[in-house]
Length: 60
Image (cartoon, rainbow, N blue to C red):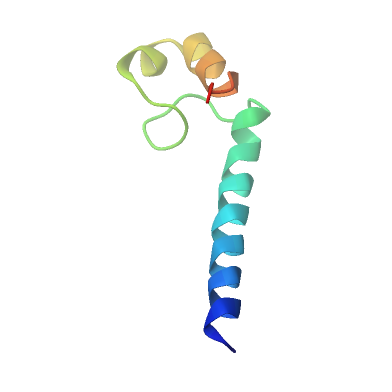
């Protein structure tokens, strides 16, 4: 396999991994925890705050 093909596969795989990890967050299936999602002291203290922070789109 050529180098550009391998790089394309690696980039696609990385993008797919982020999508797969993000779907449960978007569907509110993950409670705030120290390993997964948007983590700050306030979001870990208050589950409602953690859910709102995870669902809110980030402005660019």
